[in-house]
Figure 1 (cartoon, rainbow, N blue to C red):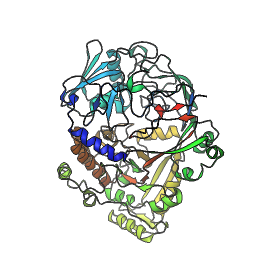
Figure 2 (cartoon, rainbow, N blue to C red):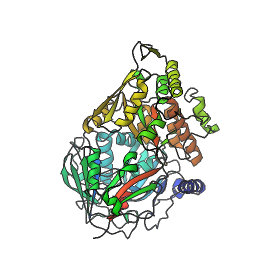
Figure 3 (tube, rainbow, N blue to C red):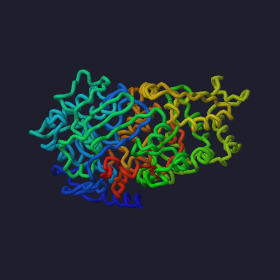
Length: 601
């Protein structure tokens, strides 16, 4: 039902006149496609309860470690909870705030209004005169310009990639900032609206690109009150937070204190939750979800186990092949490997049968290419690249091979063997030998022991065909460093998907991101076809053209065989102690922790 409502909303939004698209005057909001769902006088987001009680402490848990609280730079492993999607933009406010009940729409926060033209060649933000940093100083246009310049020059590459698209930055009047783009860009005004703003008067530009454990000043609802490196970060509510009464913040930020507790071991984290030391546990382990929630607090009702419906596409979770390595530069080799993961065995024996095999980067949504033959518009987009998409994927008919689930399916293995033969390999002395005379072999790098059972299962399957796979588990710090420098053969990771994929796809798959350190182009993709369809996606004005471009991207990525598709689920799993409550309304993107609260004693 939720996805049906979303489709209707999109279809209607695409044909309703949008004042901001015409550039007639400043608006309270801006949408990627169509018009904002909420009017200028909206009272609050529909999924937030403005009457939610305030007070108390929330304890979250994270597996891993951290050595910095600067989330804007490449250096170090930054603590969560300061500026992230899961726990929220707690310390830093952005220009505008995203509604998670719409595909991609921004509403007022630091900026009270936004203006752009029909071509989206510029964006102009007018700051709310009330906006203040936590030290009481006003947020000014000078702070905005300083932030963009600083993030462009010394921030994480994702910031630089975005801000370098701006040709001119200027102050307009007392409270305005106008950003003129090097070329028109449909998504750029919304991406810039998501940018957190730093105080010019309290930020050391010279040392900004260095890791730090010294709390920084922001304009968000919380300040950093305690830092225990690798162990805990404590955020305390700012009683003078400037935006606590504006519509887009009503019902948010309900705790007096937020604690982000770090655990190196997943089992220790779960035990802490069972003992009540952690209030909310986001569950991703299917076996545990199915069989380990029988402890006394669940039986008594003190712990509530919940599933949340989400209208999000599946995203892609899988083994990512680093094409910078010689072993994965042959596309036929990659395609053969994508056919050799025995999902049916793994799903039943490791995951209690709860998962669905992933067939698209956007499974479960109208953005998926699976089940949809390429439209004429898609064919036109892909025409300059006749070899970019396989016929089966162009027809929307490709699915990963299916086994009988026994783990010994000879037909399944034979199909994979034939694919390896096509790639130039042959079996000699029980080893899969390539044209170079060497055995097909590679290493899978894992973060701690995450995904080890899955990797072992695939290792066993490949070993039966003479493919040598080794597993290497590294700690969080080493894992992050090797990701930044692309020092691995293969990793196991997830690419989340939104209802409005956009410029982040450049960082994941664009040629420009292949050699830049610290991007999400883990596979090292540099394909003109991929670049071209991403560009078409970013320029699309109407929903139909946007869907065509995303499906074309889906087809090129699947045909390129950069990732071994694994599985997904349609709902979200979470357990909470009943002292933590949430609104009844769940938005399209699923639960939103920033709107939850602690029940008064």
